[in-house]
Amino acid sequence: MLLFLTACPLFGGGGGGGPCIDDANGCGNGGALEIDADCTLDDVLELELGGGDALFQSLAPGEEPELVSGIQGGIHMVLGVGVDNPSPDHLAFEVQVSLAVEDGDETRAVGERSVVYDGDLVAYEAGRAELLDLVVIPDDWPAEGRRWISLNVMDACGRAGQLDHAID
Image (cartoon, rainbow, N blue to C red; front, top):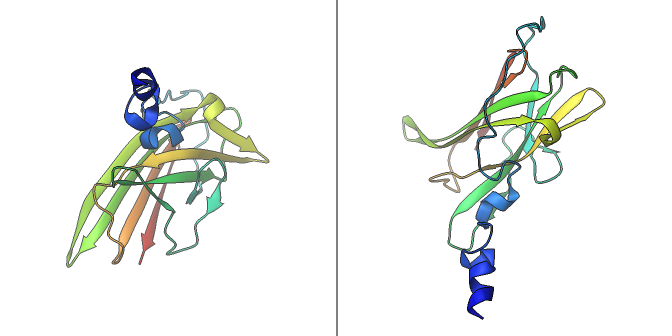
């Protein structure tokens, strides 16, 4: 019985478990983005935020992504990022996610994540790249009030895109 408990992720053994089993990079950072100095593209990346648990689901303005409750009382969200104008020859991206909440007149940061997607982690079809299974764990995420999810994305050409998603 003891062997079962230590090998089972539910009890803290084995491969870790928790929200990282839902993450494309196992909650790691995915390494460093390599910029191709020979790439001449310089337009702005066109981004879309969505839920990204194995399938991209676009978020409407003001819509909150699904919150996943953990067995120890924490929460996390699994995001997806759509890139509508990727270079098919440069399908590598660095994604920086920042979470914030408004407290009265102040906005405070409640979480962030920086991760690189490349190779098999990038879903590419019909001129669109999707970066799925991006787990972000907020320190605090109130049920009401204005909250923000901000994205900064850079591709292997050095092009960047930015998106701010407000939730009321």
